[in-house]
Amino acid sequence: MLALLWSSVAMASDPSPALSDVLTSYRIIQDEEPATAPAAGETGAPTKTRPYLMEVNMRGRYMSVPDSILDIWYFNGSDDNGAHLERPQIRAYTVGLEFAIRNDTQMGAFYFDYFGSLIKPGYWDDVEAPGDENYLDGDWVEPTQDFGIVAFGINYYYDMRLHKVFSIVVGAGLGGAYIIGDLQQWDGVDGEPAYKVREDNPDKPPDDVYRVPTVVPILDINAGVKFHINERANIRIEGGLHDLLYVGGAVGVVF
Image 1 (cartoon, rainbow, N blue to C red):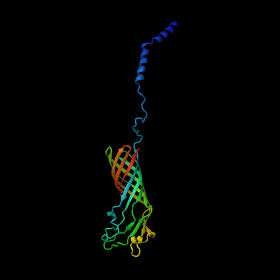
Image 2 (cartoon, helix red, strand yellow):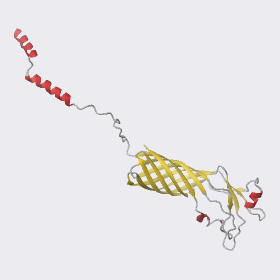
Image 3 (cartoon, rainbow, N blue to C red):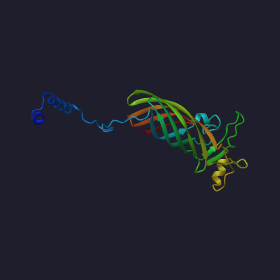
Image 4 (spheres, rainbow, N blue to C red):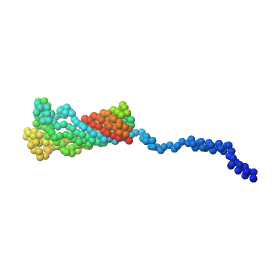
């Protein structure tokens, strides 16, 4: 019994080489253990959680119908040997929002637009066959102050990236529009042209209202360039058809 106790004390005071080796290996493992990895997001790099990006854009456009097209149906100031009253121009502006889902080359954009009218009051005289011209049978037309269009639709864009900060975009789409307000009409009286009747009787109420559809379809054909400020913002400059010919631009953020 005393021999066993003495052996235990001797082992405690003089550890064996095997136990010493184990302790040394443990210290080496502890020294070589890597530091705890940084939490996700600490490096500043964005973490991609879905296979697509989303984009919100604010856009504006200036729209018009060329005079060469209107000349097919209505006389202008160059008619009647230059004595005809000038015809108003069809002009409008739009402001709107887009919500888009996109990847590196394609984008689908849902849009909402408001069309504001820039059409001035004026004389509209329809074209008659050569030899039967009557330059005094036109109508005086004035849009009401609230005349405009609310539109919505969807566009598809294909994005051709030519440089990290520059790409060409082309696309098309469909939509619908709801027309608000009226186009008021004054007629001529007893051979006196409508513009003279309106001038002489400014308080006279309109004789009629032009009948236009309340809801109309919208066809979109778009082409332009996009400047990528960084991976989270861009500017698009484009032109095309939005029922009317247009030029415009959009500023967007990507997330």
